[in-house]
Image (cartoon, rainbow, N blue to C red; front, side, top):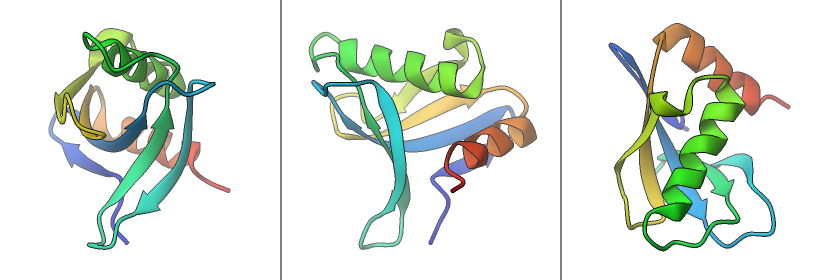
Length: 104
């Protein structure tokens, strides 16, 4: 199983499967696809129109990791369910924060 993120020089890329129009805003679990790639399942109340769901996802991830909203951006999959978020900051601290979100 792969991790749902990739470390970068200036942060991390987080792989997410987004479900818009949900009843709550939340990060659920890490899920692994048949090809072995992992992603975080996320839900937001926003509708997928004019980038509203992407913006809600960026705010949700920023709040969960304790980083400014401006440090999180969708860099791939803008109109797809599977997205890549780039989170700028200290890579080690961000990896620790992401792993802490999904420890049971």
